Amino acid sequence: MRHLLDFQGWTKAQVENTLDTARVMAEVLERPVKKVPALQGFTVATVFFEPSTRTRISFELAARRMSADVVSFAAQASSLQKGESYKDTLLTLEAMGIDAYIIRADSAGVPHQATRWVKGVVVNGGDGRRAHPTQALLDAYTLLEALGTLEGRKIAIVGDILHSRVARSNVELLPLLGAEVWVAGPPTLLPQSLPGARLTPHLDEALAEADAVMVLRLQKERMEAGLIHLQDYIAHYQVTEARLKKAKPGAFLLHPGPMNRDIELEGTLADSERSLVNRQVRNGVAVRMAVLYHLLVGRER
Image 1: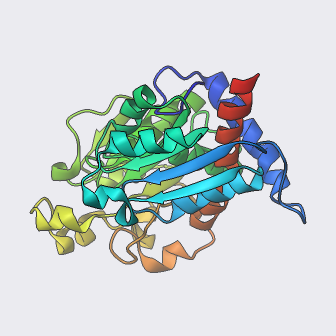
Image 2 (image 1 turned 180 degrees about the vertical axis):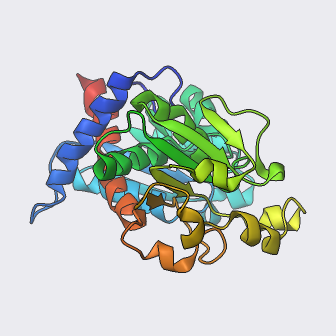
Protein backbone atom coordinates (compact mmCIF):
# COMPACT_ATOMS: atom_id res chain seq x y z
CA MET A 1 0.00 0.00 0.00
CA ARG A 2 1.22 3.48 -0.87
CA HIS A 3 -1.82 5.21 0.67
CA LEU A 4 -5.15 4.12 2.18
CA LEU A 5 -7.93 5.92 0.32
CA ASP A 6 -10.53 3.14 -0.11
CA PHE A 7 -10.57 -0.61 -0.84
CA GLN A 8 -10.59 -0.53 -4.62
CA GLY A 9 -8.06 -3.09 -5.77
CA TRP A 10 -7.62 -4.67 -2.35
CA THR A 11 -7.44 -8.44 -1.97
CA LYS A 12 -8.62 -10.67 0.85
CA ALA A 13 -4.97 -11.37 1.70
CA GLN A 14 -4.23 -7.65 2.14
CA VAL A 15 -7.20 -7.23 4.47
CA GLU A 16 -6.26 -10.28 6.52
CA ASN A 17 -2.63 -9.15 6.75
CA THR A 18 -3.70 -5.73 8.07
CA LEU A 19 -6.07 -7.29 10.61
CA ASP A 20 -3.39 -9.77 11.72
CA THR A 21 -1.10 -6.81 12.46
CA ALA A 22 -3.96 -5.15 14.34
CA ARG A 23 -4.15 -8.20 16.61
CA VAL A 24 -0.45 -7.79 17.43
CA MET A 25 -1.05 -4.12 18.17
CA ALA A 26 -4.00 -5.02 20.40
CA GLU A 27 -1.60 -7.14 22.48
CA VAL A 28 0.68 -4.12 22.83
CA LEU A 29 -2.25 -2.11 24.17
CA GLU A 30 -2.83 -4.73 26.88
CA ARG A 31 0.66 -4.27 28.32
CA PRO A 32 1.36 -2.08 31.37
CA VAL A 33 3.47 0.16 29.12
CA LYS A 34 1.36 0.62 26.01
CA LYS A 35 4.10 1.85 23.72
CA VAL A 36 6.54 0.55 21.12
CA PRO A 37 9.22 2.42 19.10
CA ALA A 38 7.93 1.27 15.67
CA LEU A 39 7.36 4.80 14.31
CA GLN A 40 10.04 6.64 16.23
CA GLY A 41 11.36 9.45 14.02
CA PHE A 42 8.17 9.72 11.95
CA THR A 43 5.76 12.65 12.12
CA VAL A 44 2.03 12.05 11.65
CA ALA A 45 -0.41 14.91 11.07
CA THR A 46 -4.14 14.62 11.68
CA VAL A 47 -5.55 17.12 9.19
CA PHE A 48 -9.25 17.48 9.91
CA PHE A 49 -11.13 19.89 7.69
CA GLU A 50 -14.30 18.49 9.29
CA PRO A 51 -14.97 18.00 13.04
CA SER A 52 -14.34 14.60 14.62
CA THR A 53 -13.89 13.04 18.03
CA ARG A 54 -13.38 9.28 17.67
CA THR A 55 -11.38 9.15 14.47
CA ARG A 56 -9.01 12.01 15.30
CA ILE A 57 -8.26 10.93 18.87
CA SER A 58 -7.96 7.30 17.81
CA PHE A 59 -5.37 8.11 15.13
CA GLU A 60 -3.43 10.38 17.46
CA LEU A 61 -3.32 7.70 20.14
CA ALA A 62 -2.32 5.11 17.55
CA ALA A 63 0.60 7.22 16.35
CA ARG A 64 1.75 8.07 19.87
CA ARG A 65 1.54 4.42 20.99
CA MET A 66 4.16 3.73 18.29
CA SER A 67 6.33 6.68 19.36
CA ALA A 68 5.60 8.95 16.39
CA ASP A 69 5.50 12.72 16.74
CA VAL A 70 1.95 14.00 16.20
CA VAL A 71 0.74 17.30 14.76
CA SER A 72 -2.96 18.02 15.19
CA PHE A 73 -4.57 20.38 12.68
CA ALA A 74 -8.10 21.71 13.25
CA ALA A 75 -9.74 23.76 10.52
CA GLN A 76 -11.63 26.00 12.96
CA ALA A 77 -8.38 27.39 14.39
CA SER A 78 -6.37 27.63 11.17
CA SER A 79 -5.65 29.92 8.25
CA LEU A 80 -8.53 28.30 6.39
CA GLN A 81 -10.62 30.85 8.23
CA LYS A 82 -8.63 33.52 6.38
CA GLY A 83 -9.26 32.00 2.97
CA GLU A 84 -6.34 29.59 2.63
CA SER A 85 -7.08 26.59 0.36
CA TYR A 86 -6.83 22.91 1.28
CA LYS A 87 -3.91 22.58 -1.14
CA ASP A 88 -1.91 25.44 0.37
CA THR A 89 -2.60 24.16 3.88
CA LEU A 90 -1.22 20.74 2.97
CA LEU A 91 1.78 22.23 1.14
CA THR A 92 2.57 24.23 4.29
CA LEU A 93 2.54 21.06 6.36
CA GLU A 94 4.59 19.26 3.70
CA ALA A 95 7.28 21.94 4.01
CA MET A 96 7.50 21.10 7.72
CA GLY A 97 8.46 17.49 7.01
CA ILE A 98 5.28 15.50 7.67
CA ASP A 99 5.52 11.77 6.90
CA ALA A 100 1.84 10.80 7.06
CA TYR A 101 -1.38 12.76 6.72
CA ILE A 102 -4.69 11.59 8.16
CA ILE A 103 -7.22 13.66 6.22
CA ARG A 104 -10.90 14.16 6.92
CA ALA A 105 -12.98 16.42 4.71
CA ASP A 106 -16.62 17.14 4.08
CA SER A 107 -15.98 16.98 0.32
CA ALA A 108 -15.42 13.67 -1.43
CA GLY A 109 -12.05 13.25 -3.12
CA VAL A 110 -9.89 15.53 -0.98
CA PRO A 111 -7.58 12.69 0.22
CA HIS A 112 -7.17 11.55 -3.41
CA GLN A 113 -6.21 15.08 -4.44
CA ALA A 114 -3.81 15.29 -1.51
CA THR A 115 -1.73 12.41 -2.91
CA ARG A 116 -0.87 14.74 -5.83
CA TRP A 117 0.15 17.59 -3.55
CA VAL A 118 2.26 15.92 -0.86
CA LYS A 119 5.01 13.32 -0.83
CA GLY A 120 3.96 11.72 2.44
CA VAL A 121 1.54 8.87 3.04
CA VAL A 122 -2.15 9.82 2.90
CA VAL A 123 -4.84 8.03 4.91
CA ASN A 124 -8.49 8.81 4.27
CA GLY A 125 -10.07 9.61 7.63
CA GLY A 126 -13.47 10.09 5.95
CA ASP A 127 -14.27 12.14 2.85
CA GLY A 128 -17.77 13.41 2.21
CA ARG A 129 -20.16 10.54 1.65
CA ARG A 130 -17.57 8.51 -0.27
CA ALA A 131 -15.35 6.45 2.03
CA HIS A 132 -14.12 5.86 5.57
CA PRO A 133 -11.78 2.87 5.21
CA THR A 134 -10.31 2.64 8.71
CA GLN A 135 -13.83 2.62 10.19
CA ALA A 136 -14.66 -0.37 7.99
CA LEU A 137 -11.43 -2.11 9.02
CA LEU A 138 -12.20 -1.68 12.71
CA ASP A 139 -15.79 -2.84 12.10
CA ALA A 140 -14.49 -5.98 10.37
CA TYR A 141 -11.98 -6.57 13.18
CA THR A 142 -14.74 -6.22 15.78
CA LEU A 143 -17.08 -8.55 13.88
CA LEU A 144 -14.35 -11.16 13.57
CA GLU A 145 -13.70 -10.95 17.32
CA ALA A 146 -17.38 -11.57 17.99
CA LEU A 147 -18.25 -14.07 15.24
CA GLY A 148 -14.96 -15.85 14.60
CA THR A 149 -15.42 -15.70 10.82
CA LEU A 150 -17.36 -13.65 8.31
CA GLU A 151 -17.63 -16.45 5.75
CA GLY A 152 -21.33 -16.93 5.05
CA ARG A 153 -22.37 -14.41 7.71
CA LYS A 154 -25.20 -11.97 7.04
CA ILE A 155 -24.47 -8.41 8.08
CA ALA A 156 -27.29 -5.84 7.95
CA ILE A 157 -26.57 -2.10 7.73
CA VAL A 158 -29.55 0.10 8.61
CA GLY A 159 -30.21 3.81 8.28
CA ASP A 160 -29.15 6.65 5.99
CA ILE A 161 -27.27 4.58 3.42
CA LEU A 162 -27.36 7.24 0.70
CA HIS A 163 -25.14 9.69 2.59
CA SER A 164 -23.01 7.20 4.54
CA ARG A 165 -19.30 6.83 3.85
CA VAL A 166 -19.23 4.13 6.56
CA ALA A 167 -21.79 2.05 4.68
CA ARG A 168 -19.90 2.38 1.40
CA SER A 169 -16.57 1.31 2.89
CA ASN A 170 -18.13 -1.64 4.71
CA VAL A 171 -19.87 -2.75 1.53
CA GLU A 172 -16.48 -2.67 -0.23
CA LEU A 173 -14.65 -4.51 2.55
CA LEU A 174 -16.92 -7.07 4.23
CA PRO A 175 -17.63 -9.15 1.09
CA LEU A 176 -13.86 -9.62 0.68
CA LEU A 177 -14.02 -11.57 3.95
CA GLY A 178 -16.99 -13.66 2.82
CA ALA A 179 -19.88 -11.69 4.35
CA GLU A 180 -23.27 -11.20 2.73
CA VAL A 181 -24.19 -7.53 3.23
CA TRP A 182 -27.75 -6.21 3.24
CA VAL A 183 -28.57 -2.51 3.56
CA ALA A 184 -31.95 -1.11 4.55
CA GLY A 185 -33.43 2.34 4.98
CA PRO A 186 -36.20 4.65 3.84
CA PRO A 187 -36.48 4.81 0.03
CA THR A 188 -35.39 8.47 0.14
CA LEU A 189 -32.18 7.45 1.95
CA LEU A 190 -31.22 4.50 -0.27
CA PRO A 191 -28.98 4.79 -3.33
CA GLN A 192 -30.25 3.33 -6.60
CA SER A 193 -27.45 0.78 -6.49
CA LEU A 194 -24.61 -0.20 -4.20
CA PRO A 195 -22.28 -2.87 -5.66
CA GLY A 196 -21.49 -5.52 -3.06
CA ALA A 197 -24.75 -5.21 -1.13
CA ARG A 198 -28.41 -6.14 -1.40
CA LEU A 199 -30.68 -3.12 -0.97
CA THR A 200 -34.16 -3.15 0.53
CA PRO A 201 -36.55 -0.54 1.95
CA HIS A 202 -37.95 -3.25 4.25
CA LEU A 203 -36.17 -3.41 7.60
CA ASP A 204 -37.49 -6.87 8.50
CA GLU A 205 -36.06 -8.29 5.27
CA ALA A 206 -32.59 -7.00 6.07
CA LEU A 207 -32.76 -8.16 9.69
CA ALA A 208 -34.02 -11.66 8.89
CA GLU A 209 -31.43 -14.19 10.15
CA ALA A 210 -28.75 -11.51 10.37
CA ASP A 211 -25.66 -12.35 12.43
CA ALA A 212 -24.95 -8.69 13.17
CA VAL A 213 -26.66 -5.35 12.62
CA MET A 214 -24.83 -2.08 12.03
CA VAL A 215 -26.97 0.97 12.81
CA LEU A 216 -26.13 4.33 11.22
CA ARG A 217 -26.78 7.78 12.62
CA LEU A 218 -29.83 9.59 11.29
CA GLN A 219 -28.48 13.02 10.44
CA LYS A 220 -30.58 16.06 11.35
CA GLU A 221 -29.88 17.73 8.01
CA ARG A 222 -31.75 14.89 6.23
CA MET A 223 -34.86 15.73 8.21
CA GLU A 224 -34.46 19.45 7.54
CA ALA A 225 -34.22 18.68 3.81
CA GLY A 226 -37.50 16.79 3.99
CA LEU A 227 -35.97 13.41 3.10
CA ILE A 228 -37.50 11.78 6.19
CA HIS A 229 -39.73 12.72 9.10
CA LEU A 230 -38.35 11.80 12.50
CA GLN A 231 -41.46 10.04 13.80
CA ASP A 232 -41.84 8.09 10.56
CA TYR A 233 -38.23 6.94 10.81
CA ILE A 234 -38.64 5.84 14.43
CA ALA A 235 -41.87 4.03 13.61
CA HIS A 236 -40.46 2.07 10.67
CA TYR A 237 -36.66 1.90 10.94
CA GLN A 238 -35.58 2.24 14.56
CA VAL A 239 -33.78 -0.95 15.59
CA THR A 240 -35.64 -2.22 18.66
CA GLU A 241 -35.59 -5.33 20.80
CA ALA A 242 -38.83 -6.48 19.16
CA ARG A 243 -37.50 -5.99 15.62
CA LEU A 244 -34.22 -7.73 16.45
CA LYS A 245 -36.17 -10.94 16.99
CA LYS A 246 -36.07 -11.25 13.20
CA ALA A 247 -32.28 -11.57 13.40
CA LYS A 248 -30.44 -14.59 14.75
CA PRO A 249 -30.62 -15.03 18.54
CA GLY A 250 -28.01 -12.83 20.17
CA ALA A 251 -27.20 -10.98 16.93
CA PHE A 252 -24.57 -8.34 17.62
CA LEU A 253 -25.09 -4.60 17.30
CA LEU A 254 -22.61 -2.05 15.96
CA HIS A 255 -22.76 1.72 15.56
CA PRO A 256 -19.96 3.92 14.19
CA GLY A 257 -21.10 6.89 16.32
CA PRO A 258 -22.05 9.44 17.26
CA MET A 259 -25.27 7.80 18.37
CA ASN A 260 -28.73 9.31 18.75
CA ARG A 261 -30.25 7.11 21.43
CA ASP A 262 -33.89 6.20 20.93
CA ILE A 263 -33.87 7.46 17.35
CA GLU A 264 -31.91 5.04 15.17
CA LEU A 265 -31.44 2.56 18.01
CA GLU A 266 -33.46 1.74 21.11
CA GLY A 267 -31.44 3.17 23.99
CA THR A 268 -31.40 0.04 26.14
CA LEU A 269 -29.90 -1.97 23.26
CA ALA A 270 -26.89 0.35 23.12
CA ASP A 271 -25.94 -0.79 26.63
CA SER A 272 -26.90 -4.45 26.22
CA GLU A 273 -24.54 -7.42 26.12
CA ARG A 274 -24.99 -7.71 22.36
CA SER A 275 -23.72 -4.16 21.77
CA LEU A 276 -20.19 -3.96 20.33
CA VAL A 277 -20.09 -0.16 20.26
CA ASN A 278 -17.41 0.30 22.91
CA ARG A 279 -15.37 -2.54 21.43
CA GLN A 280 -15.43 -0.74 18.10
CA VAL A 281 -13.94 2.35 19.73
CA ARG A 282 -11.32 0.30 21.58
CA ASN A 283 -10.37 -1.66 18.46
CA GLY A 284 -10.01 1.52 16.44
CA VAL A 285 -6.67 2.31 18.06
CA ALA A 286 -5.13 -1.10 17.28
CA VAL A 287 -6.44 -1.10 13.71
CA ARG A 288 -5.12 2.40 13.04
CA MET A 289 -1.77 1.42 14.55
CA ALA A 290 -1.67 -1.43 12.04
CA VAL A 291 -2.52 0.85 9.11
CA LEU A 292 0.18 3.39 10.03
CA TYR A 293 2.73 0.62 10.57
CA HIS A 294 2.10 -0.93 7.15
CA LEU A 295 2.15 2.39 5.33
CA LEU A 296 5.22 3.89 7.00
CA VAL A 297 7.44 0.99 8.03
CA GLY A 298 6.47 -1.12 5.02
CA ARG A 299 7.23 1.82 2.75
CA GLU A 300 10.68 2.28 4.28
CA ARG A 301 11.50 -1.37 3.60
